[in-house]
Image 1: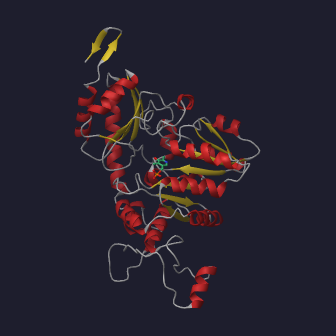
Image 2: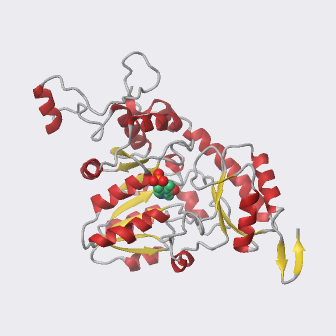
Image 3: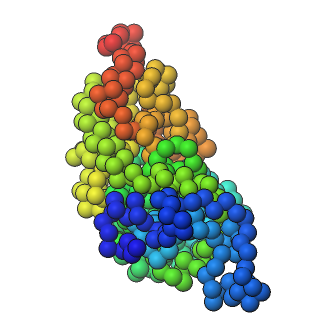
Amino acid sequence: MDTKNLKFTSKLIHGGGYKSKLGEVNVPIYQSSTFEFESAEEGARCFNGESNGYIYTRLGNPTINVLERTVADLEKGFGGIATSSGMGAVSTIYMALLSKGDHMISSDAVYGPSRGLMEDHFSRFGVESTYVDTSNLEEIKKAIKPNTKVLYIETPANPTISITDLKACSEIAKKHNLLLVVDNTFSSPYLQRPIEFGADVVFHSITKFINGHADVVGGIIVVKEEALYKKIRSMMISMGCNMDPHQAYLVIRGLKTLSLRVERAQENAMKIANWLEKHTKVEWIKYPGLKSHPQHEIAKKQMDGFGSMISFGLKGGLEAGRVMMNNVKLAILAVSLGGVETLIEHPASMTHSKVSAEDKKKAGISDGLVRLAVGIEDVEDIIADLEQALSKVKLWIKDWKIED
Ligand SMILES: *Cc1c(COP(=O)(O)O)cnc(C)c1O
């Protein structure tokens, strides 16, 4: 069946155009490392590209390809490349697009390991990088050098939830001949499709919203055009960052409910954000759906919804955050996001602990920042849990207890 003209949720269910062999409703797990050729001639055709028959699972596999075609279609790209993890996608992209002497500009509030991989390791091979607040376009323009090749954006960014204008970035990238790469993990293709705004490469940690059930680690890259797709795919194959068929099967299963999960989680997040914004123990909150978010208007322009990631700071900073996190009962103290369950974490001591104090400060990752990944539970239960945990936070001014 041609799924090209279906709407988003129908594509989730029927995507990838898999033709059943025995009438099976689900895509089978082709758990085979290698594939038999009908003849020596057919084997040769597979290798020289005249036939698209399967050869070996690192190069391609029917189960994995269904997932790749589905996500590529959702993201409006030419093709998808599934990877062993989100970081497998990041390393494949860096490796394929950057050479010795090249320079990359990236968001300063970016997934910690994406920055660590570049600064600690790609620097060893002579790749330079600059981290700026990409929500400020002037900072991007100022950072462009003659050897800049890639503009790498994460929006909404981790963990500050700041938003970068995708269309404006794509215009800057075109003008200076840069490739625009977007980490779309926090939005999922349901809420944001960066290729529509001019991105060349989009990727996801599939571990998060796309799979959605906290039981798989994986990644996927979607590329707008064929030539670049082939270049990145061949790098993934050479580096051996491929996904496993069983992983792909679980992700195809999780992906079917993406729109339902995201709708429910963001409905919950909006209610929780409104409640937190008024809470006496909350010093500040950042959620793209709130008018107080500095890039609320850009979020409205480029996202189909505001998602379910909230960051906030408590009066009482680090210690207050510690007390809150040690007292939640329903929300789970864990890193990651995008699953059906509500997770809470403290970036300064957890996901971003390797980022230097100075860089954390520059990127707006304060010691008191708490990151909440809202799940799909009943919102009353989530709020009741956060309220009882917040009630354990005692606020003091000098020697006077001011609040319970
Ligand atoms: C989790 C995450 C990654 C890395 O993905 P893994 O699947 O953990 O390797 C990259 N970017 C963002 C925004 C993430 O949240």
